[in-house]
Length: 87
Image (tube, rainbow, N blue to C red; front, side):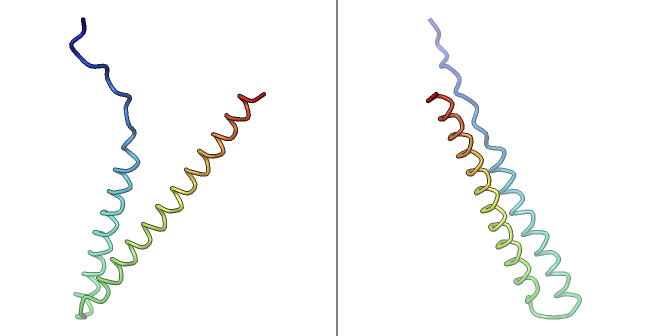
């Protein structure tokens, strides 16, 4: 009689965590660059806001293309596996 439950299969969370850290890191870096440019030019936070928006939009576009590529690869793999079982 076992009192411990069966261990669950490991879930790959590393891709999501790394994408989140990359998003946050790029926003912080571009925020710092924009803050530095605004301080150097004595301007309102124009560059800071513009560069943060640039970082966020750029990261979401990158995530979209990475996700689309991964789904296309998995779909091709699934089609290939289904063809193999029918023959």
